Structure formats: structure tokens, C-alpha cells
Length: 271
Image 1 (cartoon, rainbow, N blue to C red):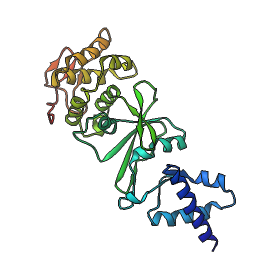
Image 2: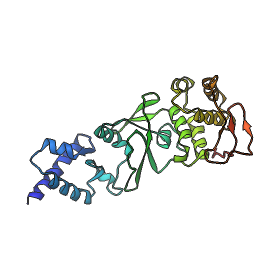
Image 3: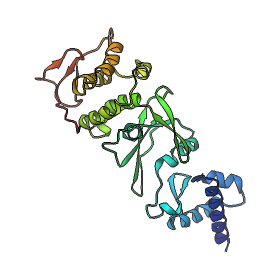
Image 4: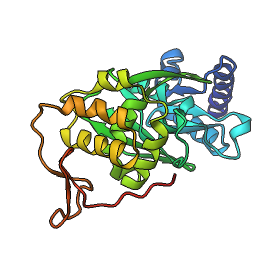
């Protein structure tokens, strides 16, 4: 009887949250607002609600509400809760790589995965009901190159087109390799601005990443003006020969001396 009372209370609690336009809550919230309920009893009732596809735990102690129109999928879009999740975790983040590229119109090869950049410590990937969130760790996240994007649930942090371009080259192994990265970069280039690109270039970005980015922009995509911004930044910097494709052998290949890039990989794009 007591468990049924808690279960009914939770149903009312969730309905009230949903009526306010929120699709998330935490166990901590419930225990703070109603300290009379035991943690174990609340978790038991939440498990019952989860089995009925009313809620889903996406991180320890953090739950999302599944509206009726999403019940068949059992999940809602990550954009509807990712900002609230990281507010709960009290951690910096931004949506990046293919996920931010799609939001900027580069949707030629939309991924089934959702990519989020975070600072240390690492978080294990979330894989629930067909939604996979990959967390990519950076040593630090600055506000440079990050913008707010409105969603139906508020705002999320996403990398702007210029930071997205840098990241897809730096983390090309996370999105399927240089061919895919170059295809996405071609679409992204339509949204990239010279001034914004110039503003975010700094010595925290490995020169090797910028060499590859400049080479692909100029040689592969013929985006000479954008490549010129990267070239200007690297001018006077001490750069060394680097392979276009990290991990591939370097011996026996020609070198593009402008960018000091060893052409050990032939890029093929989908445009």
C-alpha cells in the first residue's frame, strides 16, 4: 500500500513537471522536495514507471520523462535534455563533431550517434533505447567557438562551424575517418566565416591539426580563402612534416611543402 502511494505521488509529480514544459528531473530533486520518502522506495517506484515507458534514467540519479508521442521509441532527442544533464553534473560541455555539423546544415551523413565534448574525468558512453551519446574528452573547454542554440527545451551549447571544422579534423577517427571528415568540412565551409575562424585559432590547437585542415581546405576542397586564414596563422610558426592520415606509414610518399603534409592517403569525398 505504501509503495502504491509513492508510485501515485510520483505520477502526479511527473505530470506537474511535464505541464511546466520540463522533461527531466533528478532523484535528488524529489528527495529534497519530499524528504519523507525513502530513497529505496522512490527508486522502486521509478523502476515501475520506467517499465511502463513513462521515465528513463540516462545517468545515475537523472531521469527523463517520455511524453506519449515518444513512447514507441522509449527515448527523446538528446537536445531536449543534454543541457539539463550537464547542469545536474555541474560540468562544462558542448555538442560537437557530426552532431553540431548537422545543426549547422552539414547533414549529408548524419550519424546515429550524438557527440558531446567534456573535460576530465571521462564519462562512459550512454547507450539507451537506440540513442548513443559519445563523450569526447578535452583537457579544457573554453567559451571560444561555442554558441547557444535554441531547442524546444531551452538552449544547448554547440561548437560554431569553425570550431566544428577543427574538431572533425582533430577527431576524424571518431567519425569514420578523413573521407567523411572532408565531406562534412565541405558542407560546413558554406557556414564558416573568415573572422570567426581567425578568432579561434590559438596555440592550444596542435599545429598538425591545422596543417591538415589547411591542406584539405585548399588542396581537396578548393576553399582558398579559408585556407588562407589558417596559412596566415601558421606563418612564422615552427611546423614539421606530418602525415595526412595519422597511423598510416609515411615513407615513400610525396610531400606538400606548403603545408608540410605527407600525402599518405588519397581523400575521396561524397560531393
